[in-house]
Amino acid sequence: MDPPATAGSPSPTTATTSSSLRRRTALSVNTSAPGRGGRGMERESKEAAETERDVERAAGAEPVSPAGRLFREAHFNCYIVALLGLGAPVDVAAARAGLEATLVRHPRFCSVQVSDDVKKNAKPRWVRTTVNLDDHVVFPDLDPAATSADPDRALEDYVSSLSTRPMDHSRPLWEFHVINLPTSEAAGAVAIRMHHSLGDGVSLISLLTACTRSAADPARLPSLPSPPPPRRSGAAPPLSAGALALAAWAWSLVALAWNTLVDVALFVATSWFLRDAPTPFLGSPGVEFRRKRFLNCTLDLDDVKLVKNAMKCTVNDVLVGVTSAALSRYYFRKTGSGESSSDKRKQRKNIRMRSALLVNIRKTPGLHTLAQMMDPSKDNAVKWGNQIGYIVLPFHIAMHDDPLEYIRQGKKTADRKKRSLEAVFTYWSGNLVVKLLGIKAAAALCYGMFTNTTMSFSSLAGPTEKVEFYGHPIVYIATSVYGHPHALTVHFQSYMNIMKLVLAVDDEQFPDSHQLLDDFAESLRLVRQAASARS
Image (tube, rainbow, N blue to C red; front, side, top):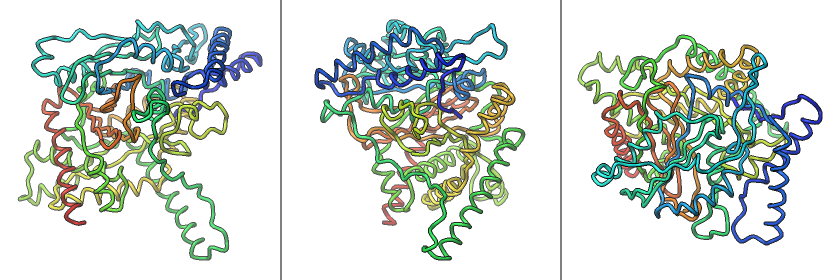
């Protein structure tokens, strides 16, 4: 729902200045490796200085996108929390120097959102400002007794407390929390909290990658995951392919149109009235304002890939299936349902449990370098921003003797959604609703979709090799989000050969949240065991 940010058009002069500003802004973020040639560094310094002068002359260069405005609404005041476990205590001086050279120079991270209150229905704009690092680098005062008794719990409690702390919107919307607390997994940590209007997960993980260097070779940027195949264009096969190929292509278009029509109808119905059945996971009114607990566990990415290869599916198919298995374990334990009653088996079949799934709708999926994303050209297919659509993804809640049945059902569900343009529809229709009816109407539709579904689900790929963050080796990356009306958010974040599972749960509704976390680990173990036996 986030189109490319465009310059305002009060006058030709302003438009020209804004265009020039955007071109240089992409170069002002230092993504080069240390030790580059002197001329290159000198040229970048001159370009950065020119950018700063242009910024001072250009006010309000870019309006806040529709998605950025939506994330500022009362029921969608969404924030992203990224916890980085580090292999060494935080060197504050090195971290500050790194922030000055990278994050502070990014156009979104040195801007504030400003509205012209004089005009009726004025749209907020991104306006550059001076960043004072002392306002953004936070050193928490942790209880010594709590940190010595259980450092892992103390870290979890502090990161969870961020969900109840307001952020000063008169400053750029990000914070850098230095937590020099050794835990069972890391020697120290930093928690980066940022407002979701700054960008989506793909944008922000690309920025994080640009702030790191390969641990094996600090002179280069880290390797990115292999990109998935580009999205199909839908072009007709050549006549030489034969009648059968043409018929298959025509049938695929019919199926695509029908699936999209059905999914759009269900999406609209969900936004208005189609509500999930009550379960232990469904949030109560006002859940978006309550404290969220962020907890995570480390899964073996090789286990996930083993299941993927055995079942001939994708990593995301496995994650959907494992999530269904874990939620089923938790559900039947909480409700006390068993296998003996046919009435209970019938009741299980009627469970409607769906998630709001964020989908990257860029024409070229996967991660990309920051330089590519900041390219201001109109034909840039991977541009920065909230380039995301929503789909309603059902989860299979049942008890199966064969753990691999969850993977089969997950693959079936995912394959069905891949043959639909639901995500593209929600992206463009969201923009259209904002333009025609205003941001309040778009927020009301999204609020209905979230409150009538049960949970949020997402997954994101990270660097495939060990990286250093301003000289600190990263042990793990655990990201999540809060501020939306769901009591449960499930996020998977890969890094090297590990997969971090991060749950964001309503602290009141899930007093046994660690048991739910264990259900995921146990479900993957059982699925992996069954896949190994099958192989």
